[in-house]
Amino acid sequence: TRPWHREAAERRLGRCVTVDDVERLARRRVPGAVFDYVHSGAESEVSLDRNREAFRSLELRPTSYGQVGDPDTSSTVLGRRVPFPLALAPTGYTRLSHHSGERAVAAAAAAAGVPYTLSTYGTTSIGDVAAAAPQGRNWYQFYVMADRAVSEQHLREAKAHGYEAAMMTIDTSTTGLKVKDVRNGFAIPPQLTARTFADLARHPGWVANILTTEPLRFATFPEGSPYGRWGMSNVLREQGLRPSDVTWLKEAWGGPVVVKGVLSVEDAIQSVDAGADAVVLSNHGGRQLDRSPVPLELLPAVVDAVGDRAEVYIDSGVRSGADVVAALALGATAALIGRPYLYGLMVGGQAGVDTVIDILASEMVRTMSLLGVSTIAELGPQHVRLRR
Ligand code: FNR
Image (cartoon, rainbow, N blue to C red; front, side, top):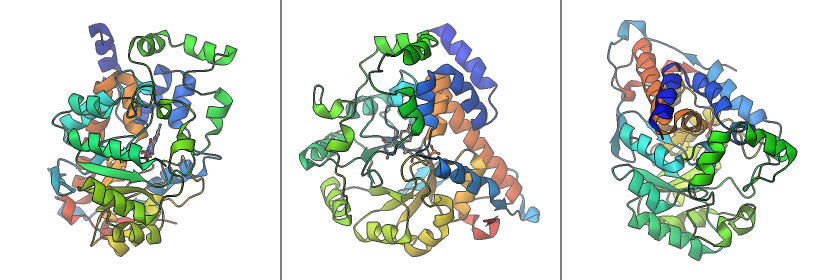
């Protein structure tokens, strides 16, 4: 990024107090169809709204005589220290949000000391992400392909580049339908209509950056392969995953395996029985099955069922450090964020992701201080109440 662009981005970011502030600025930085692709939920967006509503209506219960000035937010994820129990969730097409894409996000995560997950539908290769964040804890998210030889190639590459964990997403037999994407004619490359042309014309800087950097494609697949092409994903992905696929991944990978997209106690138990070291309670940020359970509301029952055998993470709707603290109090080991870091990326590349992580970290410190807990380990169900 040219220096004056960076200065302008830093000025914008400096004015952001919350993740919602970052989101408001992000909306203006990218074409409307790109913002909609990131922001939208599936179908009627009921899950999208409920995810937020669950966090908002939750009550935090302080023990005021126990207040502390400088709580310690550090914890462990997959047995290794993190300054705060946060991880960055996998997102497809990250370079649409900003041309620096996955490299910038991975570098920001590495600088903060938290894990970053590269998506199978990432727009930067497995090796290029590792090179951009050599000290980072990089995780690789598997959409298992119908042709297992293709997924085995991903396994080998992720291993060769030092990725720490394999995350298998199990909630995407078919891609959830986002109504706005259809209306916007959202596609890669864009279908040029009067409408999409006008949208792009309002964002010449974004267009110039996209056109002068490497072509947008699913870069975890070899160049020229059909897997890299828009519209091919449903056809080539495994559409009926079973617990035996978790066992396959655990054996083939030989390291920590995380199963993402768990939405029932039964699926959590089956995942852990099959070899998962961690599960992510997630409704994909409300982007897959609409009206699916809200991960936050499911958390206590899942922690009860598998919490002594596996780590339980949560995502979908985390927008503040207080949200993270609430999830930890209900038994989560860590929280993942998706859209928040993409909004940061839209506003200012890596600096924007740094800002979002900083905002969440400082909110965590304030929340723990006011709640009266000095360490993550002290957080418990006594600190929260789910209001129904
Ligand atoms: C996603 N998500 C996702 N998940 C996954 O396993 N593989 C993927 O390729 C993607 N792609 C993707 C793209 C975009 C634009 C978004 C917003 C999300 C889901 C993601 O990992 C995570 O579950 C949600 O983003 C969490 O919800 P919040 O934090 O966005 O509310």
